[in-house]
Image (tube, rainbow, N blue to C red; front, side, top):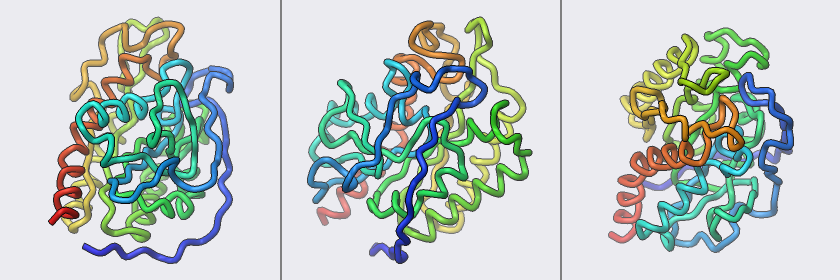
Length: 271
């Protein structure tokens, strides 16, 4: 299906670095993401373009380097190294980040409204697939204390705006992660985590019913075993951002969700 791309407005993105959720980490705990020229560090011709979108869970925290780097390596290990790439207006190279998979649209402290502010420029990268996890900062204690109805309204606006720019994009929505308690002895999904998971799932079902390519990806304790202390390893993480093994679990979940769509896009192009 041929894409219908709306006229892009030129916008300047504000990169705010602040704490994610109710963690108290210093700002230098976050991986720095910078705005860069272009939307990918390689030629994207013929590749399925994936845009990793969100806050510090996407951008990275300490040495864990975020799920997206583990996802990139998983794509390469499974034979998609020459047929996929990551796109976006942000650039964050790391030792774990292979060529063609550095780009993203995610920044530490980002909110739903923050994503909306730079959306037109981000969508100019023309992603085929968007994987999006946002809402932790909107629900957290250090947020602007939005009530659930306000978060829902802003989230719906974000999804409507993405689909207005590109109705054919394949959009995968993940719910915010559970967190650990202060002693890192267990995970916690409070009432707001449970609420937003249900809301995002219902939103995906509604959009899919109306023929959009929108899918829900569950990151709750119902779908992933978050009980391992290794997932919240001291020195690598705080109680909001998982450590390396937790990020690998996230990458595995994203890979399982998007891999059939990658195959379908490649098959359609080859036909």
